[in-house]
Every structure is written in structure tokens, then in C-alpha cells.
Image 1 (cartoon, rainbow over the protein chains, first blue to last red):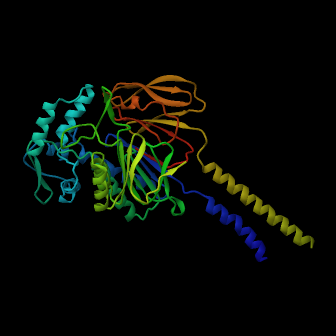
Image 2: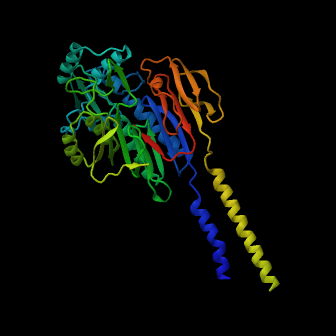
Length: 316
Length: 124
């Protein structure tokens, strides 16, 4: 009898182990790209809540449109005190933190210069040296005062650009939310450049394809993956690829590396570091990744020129 | 003896029914082999195209600010022309694999192919 019961239970157990979690997902347009929220457990209301997080951070960090809220667009239009939402104050506090002083190529005050480059890209022209120098001079005399009580004041003329931190920060907030809801199985992809990974059924890793490398994959879970890459957003002029990422030291839109991938425990930091690392030397990256406790892959000419020891890239 | 045999046959029948039923359930909940291109405009799904069975042709969609000419060619999808300043969507070329989106930020258009894939996400 026991044998028969065992025989009966065996296929049932197999079936349960074979079954896959039901996925619910949503695609929404934020941060000038699409955000793909995929939950392998949880409810539709969780998707709605996550969507709201993205909507709010997108609104607060948009430097191109008036959004009827005291967002970065409004801060960039005055040198008066502005009272902002706590999340925006937090993002500004993190972006201007002294902890980032060791980064050579991250400066949130490059907003005006980035806009000038964007305009020149649209006109298929390289930004002139005189305009670049003018903007660099403005940047050197600009800043942001964090006055407490969610009050900030921009000094100088340069605009603040939170493009290098907004998606990562939003993913941090999403992770906080998912942790509170005890949801562990998820994948939230913000435009293929910032991805938040939970875990798959049975605690398994997700497989992430690396666009800049042929047939190469990462097996990862419970982390953030950020990238800065020339593969999608660039303008080619006179045989030279010009990026949307600007070197804040010389104003150039030509990046040192083709792509950088950063794997981190903190979303906003991963985003900032991938932006910075795309212009850092390999020697600097080796030092900085230890300081910030992240793993890095540097890609040049469609091949890995550096990766953190122990980080496995699988070729299939 | 006969009773035992009959019970055994019933048990085997129940087991087979469970296995077949379970397999069917698993197979039906899995994604189909077909590659389906989904086109979103301003977060709304506006078009679904079965790339395996769709003949080559072009068609125009209205984006948030301008029009895009979408092209189906050799079971792949691409943006042939677009009313946008950067033309990033056109530069992305034709896509025939999953998880490799074509995005026109200016027009808030997102094209993604869904179907069976050997990876979960793409970085870069």
C-alpha cells in the first residue's frame, strides 16, 4: 500500500516541481525609454504601485518638460530657494555627495552642456570648441546648496542633469517596495540600461545577454545591472561615434570605452559608476570598483578589456 | 487476486491521467514558439504581429509626435523611416530575436519581440 501511495505521490511531486510561476508584467514609458516590470509572484496591484514609483521619479527628474511640480526643471530655472519632494532632495543629496568625489567623470552639473550636445546631434553637427568652453566655464562656477527641510538652491548658470542617476534611484525605490511586500521573484528592466533582478523559481539565476558581446551571458540574481554603452544612443559624424554621455572635464562626447557594465547592490550607484567608468582608465576602474564594492565589465571593440576577478561571462 | 489487479489498473489509470493532465497544463501555460512582435505607443499596445507568418510589407503607425514606417522583412521587424531627430530607432536595424527592443523615445514607440528565449533580459 505504501508503495502504491508513493507511486501516486511521485508524479504529483514532479508536476509541482515542473510548474512555473505565473508572470504578470507591464510596459510603461518613463525616463525617455520603456520600463518592463515583470513579477513572477504578487498581484496586479503590485504592478500598479511600482508603476507609480516610476511615474513619480520620472516626473521629479525630468529636465526637459514643465510638469507642474517643483522638479529639476524648475530648480534649473532659478537661483532662488526651492522646496522639493523628499525623493528629489534625496536624489540630489546622493548625486552631490562627497562620497563621489573620487569619480573623475561624473558631474550632475553638466545639464546645460548635455542639452547643447543634444541639439547639435539633432543638427548632425559637432559642438564647437567655443560653446564647449563657455559651458565648462559655467559649470566651474555653478553648484547646488542643500539647505535642509527639502530646500535646495542652485548657484550659477549650469543646469543639473539627473539622467545618470534617475533610473537607478527609481529601481532602488522599487526594490524597497518589493522587500516590504516580501516579493522575491521579479525582473524590472528600465530600458535595457538599468535592470533590477530578484530571483527565478527555486532561487535560480536570471540569464542576462550582453548586447555588446557576441553570444555572451551573465547569470545573476538579487542585484542591479547598469550599463553605459555606445551601442544604442550615438550619432556618427565623420566616422566618429558621439555618445549621449559627456566627459565633464573637457566637454567631449567621445567616450573612452565602448561599453561598461556595473553589477551592484545599489541601483543609483551602479548607474552613476557606469556613467563615470565609460571615461575612466582601466587602472582607475580597478581602484574605484573596490572602493564602491561593485563588479565591472569593460568592453572595447566588442571584446572584454577588463572584468572583475571571479565574475563569470558565459559563452554559448 | 482479481480485485488487486483491478485496483492496480485503476491506480495506473489515475497516475496516467494525472501525468497527462499535468503535462498539458504545463505546456499550455508556456509561451508559444512563434515570435510575436508587439508595438507599443505611449505605453499602449497598438499592434501584435506573428513574425513567422507575416509576409514582407511596410506600414505606418502614428507615434506621440510623428509617424514611423515599420517594415517586416524576412520574419524580422525594423523601423524604415521615422519623424524623429536622432533616428536611433532606424539605426537599430531589423530585429528577429526576443528581448532586443527597438525604441523611439521621441515618439514613445517601443517594439519588442516576445516568444521563447534562452535568456531573460538584455543589458546594453
